[in-house]
Amino acid sequence: ESDARFSECSFQSEKGDALGAIHSSISLNNCGFFNVAGNGICLYFSNATLEGISFSDIQENGIESVGSGVTAGKIKVKRIGNAGLMIKELSLLKGSGFSFENCVTAIVAKDKGEVNLSSVVITHCETGLKATRKGDVFGPSSITIKDFQISDTKYQRIEEKGSVILVN
Image (cartoon, rainbow, N blue to C red; front, side, top):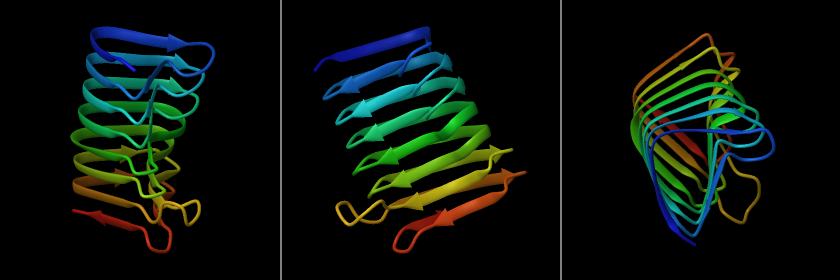
């Protein structure tokens, strides 16, 4: 458990996640995550404030959040092997100014994960939005986006029974 603040920095990782937080509060301002073998940021039961963050060439997820609260703005996500945002297991992510390009999936809310965003652009991804649940432990998920643009994406949205996706 610890609190941390990062500003004007970059992260890389040839093995595993670039930055992890457990039962902590973190703040990142104008940082980049590049060439990461795992997740860019991995949050477990933590709080995070993210502003002006770039993710590119990440093999897993840009941000993975479990049981955490995240406030974010001006986030750029490119070339992600799984999801740009993986918000799950009672996590809440809110913010504005997100762009996603060349991701397998741009945004996933899973197992009662909740995503509330505005000003989102998704291009050249296999799947744009996905709201799902793995089992009965947590329940359905939700994604709500205002001011939403999506193009050149095979599946704009995948919404499993009980979960909700609301756009514009």
